[in-house]
Length: 324
Image (tube, rainbow, N blue to C red; front, side, top):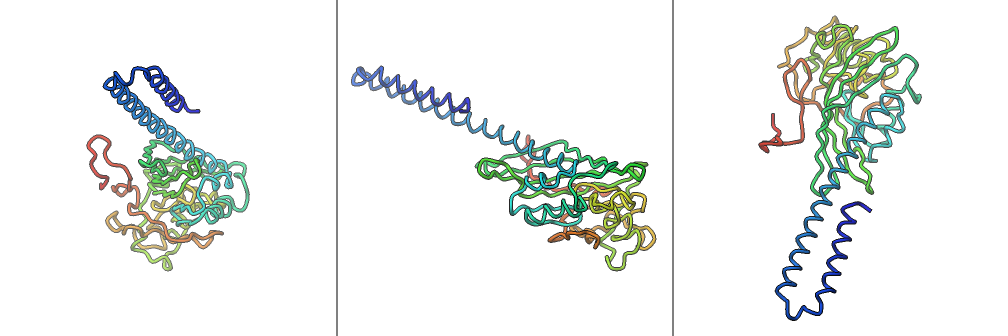
């Protein structure tokens, strides 16, 4: 039994004892007994509020543990464990596209990221650190929103190495007392080679480039979102292209890497950030074993564009809304 529940039980027993002890004198002390009842009611209300606050704190801790478990499972190629953290009707929206339903998400992990195998191959680094959590539980305690920043260290021994960064804006729900991921949305900030890092990131002007006309270095060519290494560390990730993967399915908005980003031969010159059109992300490469169910949604194209990814919370001091 929770400490607050024990306190409430003790308070109720004390109240019962108080009522029994003052029963003989009730007729003569109705005013006093009324005051006692008010005191008891006030104490019970405070205990209810304390219990609700304790539950909220426990929920936030459980959600943080859930998200960190997800990233750890992805780091180690534990695809089935990662998929088990989602609801049956969940949506996982990565740079290569959105996967709808737990079954589709599981197939993305196993087929696209794991190349049909559990675990990572020897020599592959696929670490995704989640930082700066902001978690808000709904007043009814049945759902929550969470925002996280991800920094990834990626690579294949004796082949290549890269950096990746982005933002998670997720929705969680509590099912039968257990928190699960309902909507996972990854917004790409950058993908970059290890050497030179984010200083070598080049914008990928996908809005100005028809996918069918893009050649090497374009939206579907090596170094773009669809090149080897683009689809978030799928099996070919170690062999070239952009940074060797990002979040699971997240090598998109910013090109770069050894194959070159947007604007390399085969595509039109790189455009300025103003040329980006919201939600116009690269088409998933045909090399994916399991294709997404719908396109990726990303209003902000990521670094070097100076835009702000969506976030769910108001200013904690002023209460000002979250419109950038």
